[in-house]
Image (cartoon, rainbow, N blue to C red; front, side, top):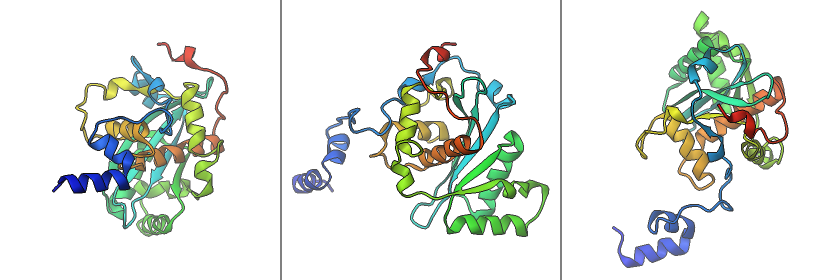
Length: 238
């Protein structure tokens, strides 16, 4: 399948992919969107305590599309004093509309997020229509759905993906590394997928979890407590 000619063609057409896939040369910090990601991994963080806390919580949902079958749901909590972000629940799956609604409903029941931010596309309307036409206590989250339109916002230095990197650099996120540190490198769980996407962006195979995190972060910025500026590294020592 990969004779010399095919490999040379791949190297010409996709040199960065060739370097990573065939020569095992990893991304440099200059190529990565989030070089500060690893600095936010923390040991000794009790995920259960954060999940049960009364801190404000925000959920981001990156919905599937015809060309991208997976849906990602990321819920974060914001520590009131410092404004640091803690992931509390990560979900990923190739769900149908009713299954996606059930997953969001489960998140809403468990964490009662202030807002559920969803990319503003056609699927959002169909999801809202499905929830309102199947009214029940389980589907009461529809009133929390907030659309977010991507586009130029994505590269905005403040509200876009570069803004996330600034927060990672200042250690304004606390990633509970104990949850998945011992998992196999190819582990398909949501925590490992989330970590791989942030480490490998923008050249990773997927970025759905990154987008859902960005939506949740926008929800926190817009409807919650603004992030504290400055280096918060000393606050991560636990």
